[in-house]
Length: 131
Image 1 (tube, rainbow, N blue to C red):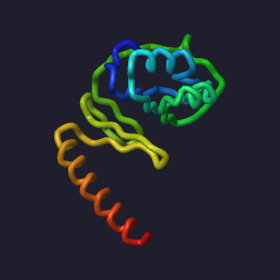
Image 2 (image 1 turned 180 degrees about the horizontal axis):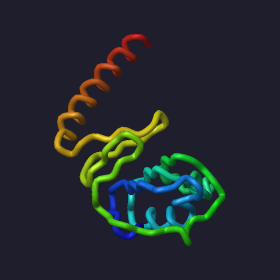
Image 3 (image 1 turned 90 degrees about the horizontal axis):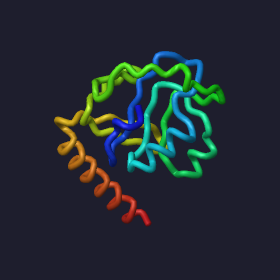
Image 4 (image 1 turned 90 degrees about the vertical axis):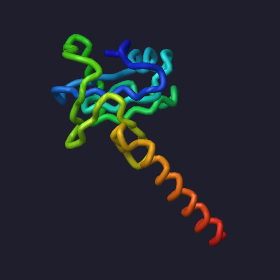
């Protein structure tokens, strides 16, 4: 589950239940040490204070103290998954921030990035004009 995520990528996990944590301190330490950029999971997270101190971006469905190590059953890696109503495929761009998470299909990622940069430049001009 942790070892398959390449450095610079975001770990994305589709979890099958909503009882216990699927990610915690030790998982984050492992992912971060290997250069993983962050994690999005349709499941639970624990050890939030440690994760915040590590400044490792995690977006989870819920927070709980319940450990799930004994419940893990890895079915597959590097396959398309659904998180909520969003379909995510290996290679898609996953970007998260204070306002949430956006998934951009790999096939259009470059053009979306160019458009986002144009929009950000325009907003910066408007902001500067108002100052």
